[in-house]
Image 1: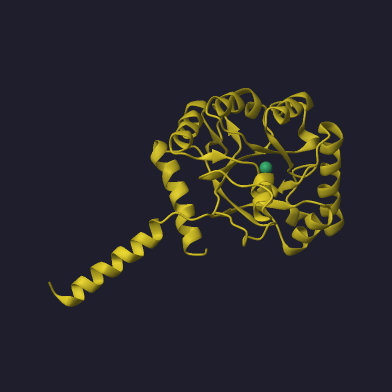
Image 2: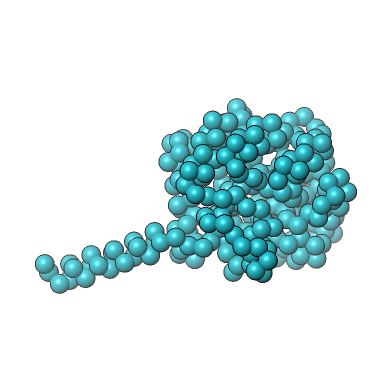
Length: 250
Ligand SMILES: [Zn+2]
């Protein structure tokens, strides 16, 4: 065989091996609604969600909370094999009625970012449901007080959205609220600083990728899971794409 061709093949094999080799970086999935909803970007059906949870279980993934993830960075918690964080934004009632029983069936748990001013309104969780989810191993986080984009408001308002939502949630569920998700994925250096000052340990964005101890804690990356057009393959591809992003340092 031509020497150059042999070298080329070896090089390709090495690159592919490196790309496919597992990382210790952790995926964070981002869901909104689970059920028959018109907005396909922000929902998956119950059967699609079940198929995805089943896939995670059968492929050795273990759901952890963001608290577990952050505690692992300081050596306080040892992570299980193939850790994954499952998050929901907005706090829809179907997270409780539909997603929670499916997750429990497959031994999974989630982090739900709720908006205190929406709690108890049509289609959203009630306080009682939020409290019950928390009892059933759901981590509760803040998604601002009124679901406003952080880039639409000034620093004083950003601070109020961050601090008031944290306080309102802590008053109701009597547990420290440590994590935040930016509505519409909007964030800035100023907003990150405010979250730090108001006592949050970290915040989720809409940026794609995986996370490790070197990831900015106030700019956590996620894998958005909209309604798949190509079934489970699309879900697997999204997980793999995030892995590649992480490998390439994107
Ligand atoms: Zn939202």
